[in-house]
Amino acid sequence: MAMHIALTFDDNFWAPAFATMRSVCLFTHRREELVFHLCHRTLSDEHKADLDAIRQEFPVQLHWYDLDQSEMFRDIAARMPENKRLSNIVYARLMIDRLVGEHVERILYLDCDMLVRDDVGYLFDLDLEGNAIAAVRDTIGDIITGGRDLRGNRDLFNTADYYFNAGMVVIDLKQWREADIVGQMEAFLASGVMQRIYYDQDLLNLIFKGRCLKLPWRWNTIHARQSHECFDPAILHFTGKSKPWSVLVGLLQSVAFARLYRHVMTNELYYRFARHRWKRWWLKKLRLAR
Image 1 (cartoon, rainbow, N blue to C red):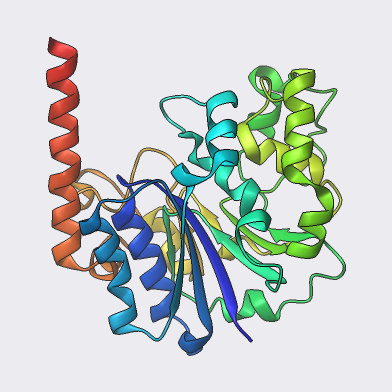
Image 2 (tube, one colour):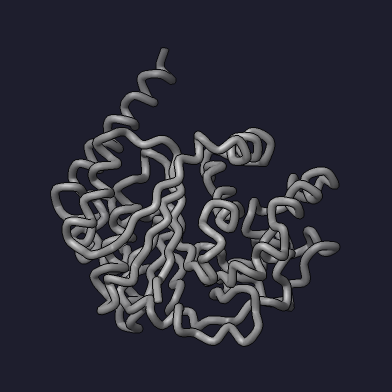
């Protein structure tokens, strides 16, 4: 049985996407079953070649979806809320059911700021017990929904409810399709709800309230720090500003498994990605100085 995995990213995040993919491959014995669905903004030839190179190391399949060629994505990205910290690429996961084929029954969505170090086969063999999705509780979900003094959006959310992080979601695509995610998002936009909530994560929590199988925290260890290492996390989620691809991570930050991450990304790509980020940083500074 194929294990379908979806990732969304743009051309400035190709290296972390590769690291997430490679970590999945390294920590499973079922590599020949892996099918990666890469939902991306238009990639440079060099970056696409970097990603495609994973097929030389592992017997995996890659399916490419250029979101910039999708009229639906372009329309959604132009109209939905975003900010400098969170790109509109997040909305791509709402379209997963419309991108992959009807033959795909279950898919695992992973954010690209993740490092997998356990067999994802567990998530594909998992009994969803009739639920539409399976996910891990977000450790700051109450702050996300309630805001200051936990008094916001009480007409939409109850802090006593299970609020999941959408960085790792096991999806029953039949129920996902039946939920008409894109249609519901359009309705929320028209009613003004989308302008009040935390992008697609809040939307998914509203749609799948009471229909999410609760997973142990180790399958999405949020804000992964060195102190988490002794608890043997299965998937590390590097939320926040501290990232394992920073070359200063060993000196200034306490990100979990930073050395492992560098070797998973591979040293050559790790330092090439660092040069890419430094170049972008300086170009941004120069533009602002003009």
